Picture 1: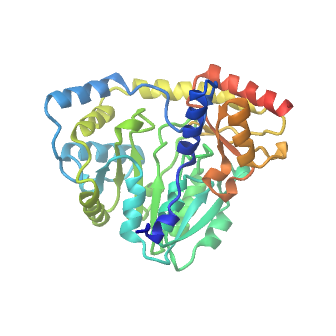
Picture 2: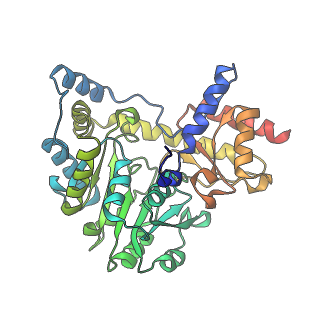
Picture 3: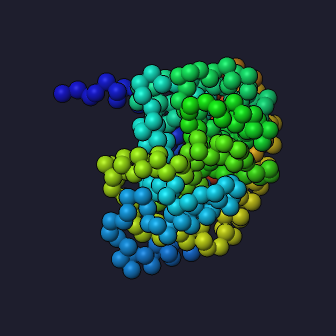
Length: 386
């Protein structure tokens, strides 16, 4: 018996591969600074944990509705309506275990073999993985460093064809930390409004921003009915292990996602939904403090990276990633990332882990202490000097 051919089209996440290698080195007694994995290094807010404990005591331990509990979906609808300035009802919300199902399920529901999907490159690798797995054609559009890692709009426009069935947007962006400016988003909306396609808008980092707030393409006239908003709790509320996310989409597509949910997961865990309810309705002080600390680290870390020979790094506007250009070192991204892990004890990712247009870059997660971040820079400096 052999695996089906489509399994060869699945990609993996480089962060988890590098984490395994880094842990193996630590097991040998090596000191490793972990800047590879993309998760907040903060505790889940206490009131969220307390809500989950109470839910367990109250026996929220059984099956729930496939789409998510109605009161939870209503709160999510109100949250999206107020933050994106669009009308949202509970029947447009699908609660799922994590954010990735809102990549996989809508693609599975919408794409036929041969359909084309435009997505950012460098970008979250699961976009391309799911597109290829389903037999659709991945169409990468490069992000441009000089434009703050937004698209070249002429390249985006020229990439659209009659076969384009989906466009993936991600702002704030992983791995670059870039934002799509409001004027660019307006122009993208104008490009897409009259086309027969859907937009997957990955907004999982929408509250981790340091200046201008990101604009959702769903907020532009005529775009909400064409948009799938992906959001969740992993990043904003430091709940990566809770596996709690959601999508907001037209009701006809939410019904299809529900079918895929019932065939795969049945439902999202009941007690985690009560925790999510507390996260949205309870105090937001922990989120505010976390973002402020990320900004403090960002400012110091980017300044330090820019003192390294062969490095130049733009100031990221959101998320918690630095994406320095390392072409000045003369080393390929993968080689430099491997050498930094093995010889300097700094775990990071090559830009090519996020697509071919990531060559010449590294990604560092600054979800680590400022002390460790500055220590990592000095380790890199010593390595480069050798």
